Length: 292
Image 1 (cartoon, rainbow, N blue to C red):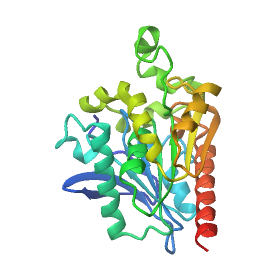
Image 2: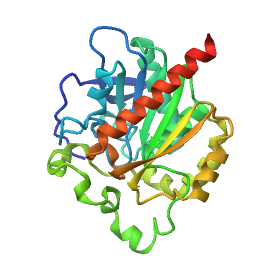
Image 3: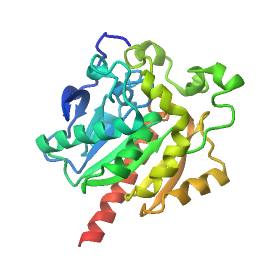
Image 4: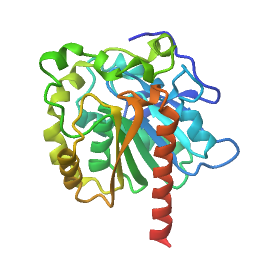
C-alpha cells in the first residue's frame, strides 16, 4: 500500500483511535461552531482506506466535508490491516474480529468527543459486512441507523469463477464515464492490497449474513449502484434480504443511478451522500418521536 500521505480536503484532519490496544488511524471532520447533530462513522471497503470518503478528484466527492457542513461529525476509520494498524496486523483480521475492533475504536472516540444525538454507521462493500456485524453484536445504545452500499447478501453467480473472477479489480469500477477524469490520478494513496485474512472471509459472507442479520435492531438502508457488478439485487434477492432483518425497525433499499460500485468516488457521490444523510435525518426524527 502506498505510504505517501493523501491530500485532505479543508477541515479534514488525521487522528488515531485506541481500539482496545490496537491503534486505528482515521480521518475526522467536525461541524463548525457547535455540537454535532450526530456522528457518522464511515467504514471503507476492501483494498481501499478511509480516504475513500474524502475523494480528491472533485470538491463534491467528500462525505467528510459535506456531512460537516450539514451539522454532522464524520469519522472515517481505517479498518484493521489498513493505515496505521497495517504494521501490527499485516494479515488483517477476520470480519468478526474487525467488528469487535471497530466497536472498540468507536467507544474510544465517543469517550473523548461530542457525538450529538448518537451514531450512524455508513459503510461500503466489505466495510458493510463489518458494520452489519458491529450493529448485530456490538451496538451501543447510541447507534441510530446503518447505511450500506456495494454489499448485499448474495453474490452474482460468476463473482468468483470464470470471466467474473478474471475481471478482478476492474469489475468494481464499472464504466469509466461514471468517475471524474482525474480519479485514478488522485486515488493512488487510497488503493492497496487486501489483507489475507480479510480476503479469506469474502466468499463466506452469505452464511455469516444469515446468522447475524436477525440481531440488527436499528433501521437499515442498502444502496445498490446502477452498475453494481458483485451483488444480486433482483426482486427475489431483495425480498430475501429484507426477510432476514427481522429485528430491524425498518429496511430500505435504494438504487443509485449513474454510479458504479465505488459510488463515493464517482460523479454520483454527492447525490448518494445526501440520500444517506436524509436517511439519517429520518432516523433522528424517529428517535425524537419515539422518546417524547
